[in-house]
Length: 277
Ligand SMILES: NC(=O)c1ccc[n+]([C@@H]2O[C@H](COP(=O)([O-])OP(=O)(O)OC[C@H]3O[C@@H](n4cnc5c(N)ncnc54)[C@H](OP(=O)(O)O)[C@@H]3O)[C@@H](O)[C@H]2O)c1
Image (tube, rainbow, N blue to C red; front, top):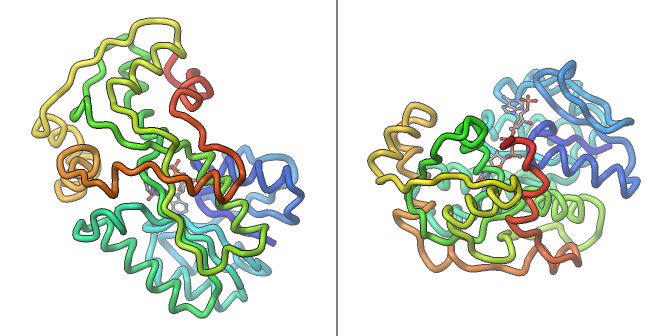
């Protein structure tokens, strides 16, 4: 049995669908609210809160594999609970910033989780994705209201990834041999700027979406109440303020692991246009 955490999220939903399509065996999706989780037919919705590892006991019982999204709880305790439950293999979602920006707080935390997993005695596969296409959902309220979208670093092009591609790599790691001990840096197929992302969303909607670039200070004022000032600075560094060659590099890991080219941002925008209408 496989336990998928973050199961109602961008990666988790796509992963459960893919695992079911390939007959991966019994599947459980973890959520804090099973009544609201609309999982695919046959997936068992289990209650659990990663912030309270003791609440994961019944979700982990009988699990041989675990798909774990990091930094939603005390990861050392979560990994220990998994080990005690008999989990043999963990696929961990870390972040490419563990490689590109190891000095930043969130990246340091991901590196610490990666080390804990490697030392856990369980088999492991580490996924290090770059920024998700789905981060642009933060613009959805303004787009729906026909207001101007504001974003910094309008012309910084990053190889944003479609979350379904992270799911596809996770599915391969969970169901195919050869991925134990793998650390995969994952990007989309091409760099794309915020200005181009807005244009792609506008094309998917069939109408103009007005856009204005804002300064780092203005963006920080918007993000700090949501994430805290330090994390807001980290987000702004890795979206344009302090990018480096490693972060800008397009990698072919998705197509190498899955045999299918990575999905474009334009594809994501078409699939998710409903969220912006
Ligand atoms: N966005 C990026 O650019 C980026 C880049 C690199 C790495 N990441 C990492 O990717 C991971 C997954 O992102 P995503 O976009 O797929 O997720 P998402 O759409 O943001 O959804 C969050 C998921 O986490 C679950 N969750 C949140 N708090 C929880 C808790 N205390 N206990 C149990 N479940 C909890 C939610 O489940 P319920 O609400 O149903 O409980 C939901 O399924 C995150 O951990 C993030 O750190 C993101």
